[in-house]
Image (cartoon, rainbow, N blue to C red; front, side):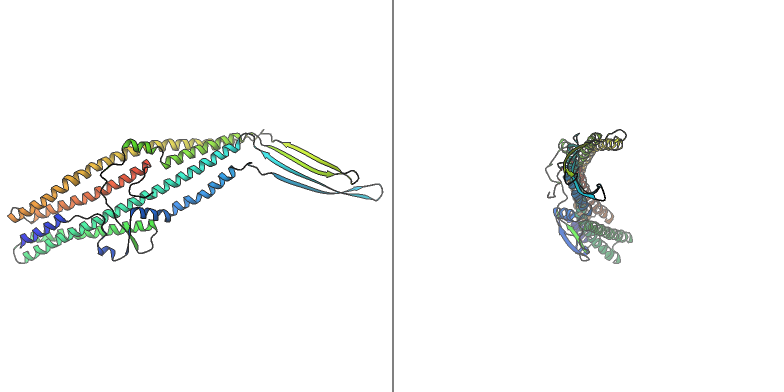
Length: 433
């Protein structure tokens, strides 16, 4: 009876492997409403609901308004003036002459040092920078969602694995307890089996708790209604074919949205410095006027042309020039540091990804198959009476630990891949643009 029970339990352990893409056990889903989502659906919902991304997009209206003003034909609006004069001129004797006189003027201020071109250049670069920042925020959000999505997928498979392990050890513990009551097994065997069963219960409970937390975090990011938690589907295993190499990633990193935004900010700061330098030249104001003056018997028609130029003797825009120069220097430093850091980050993440590939290959192709073979051999040894319960439990535990390691390695691989593609500005795999 003992041999038969242990053989059945070991056979269950050999065949127990979480199938990719399956939902969590019913015990996890009965408390909440499960919402099956693909990775692309999750990314789309996050973009629609994320407050930070929506706030960033709202800045477009202000920046587009600045560009519209910068594209105006003249930066200063014309000034229209009108003077109406009622004059009483004393004559000889008590009589007076009443005169009604008027004058109308139009004045326009012109920039003479190319300020309009610099202002347009600065506004266009600022708009380009904001659009790149929005794209970077969008990519960062999608990467964060994908990280949480793959974590949920791994935890779903972990819950399945722990549930199968719990069934295995509970079956073994129950069989050993019956045999101990019948006097066929020792108290030591019974205690060992009971401890392994309790450890399996704890592992199962812990996996369910972690899965619930991960689903709640993703539900909050997707702004799902209360009581609705996402269920992931898909495969944690990496694709057979590699989409890129290190050289391709480094080349793509030079044009990723974050660096494009910093480059546009630098261009905008440089244009603003040119604008402030040009503002030292005084603007010229031209005015044209017409009016009527004099007595009714000798009414005069006046036409005037005025030119005014302020003299930059004391204030020469030094404050604004200094601020613009400082902003340009800071923008240049930020872009240079970001380029250097991005290249280093891509190289580091690439090296880590290659290491994870090797770990994954060893675990998946050598460790797990060897331990599964050990399980089959341990069943045969148990039948032959060559090993006891303790040795069998150790073999089963090693097999379960190897499968846990495989899930952890797969999750690390996906997390590193997402971070690498984000750093290099590469289109993420599995997410519809």
